[in-house]
Length: 134
Image 1 (tube, rainbow, N blue to C red):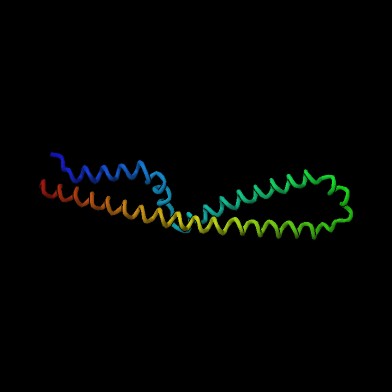
Image 2: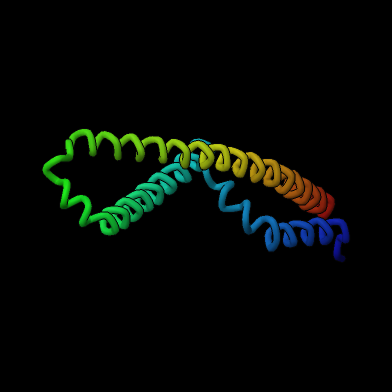
């Protein structure tokens, strides 16, 4: 005979896994530090690539001006200036990434905790029904 409460609980679990769970279940596989580090690493790589592309485009657009004044430019000061721009840009990019990753992980863990409590409820129902069969 089918236990209706177990069917309802299993339906709720299946709905979660197909809906919200698709987004949160992969996050639940990580420790907090690992998830945040992974997001920061991806942002660092993408930020560095974006900086390189923007810097390259600016260099190409102003290449003639650069070549005309190449002997008048202090290359060390030029490199320091762009290194500062890069560092400030990365800080301005990585801080919001960190805040977003913490928020996303916290939200996922809250959602997964309720999912796990429903799983525990189903597990208890299963063992109760197994004990009554014996």
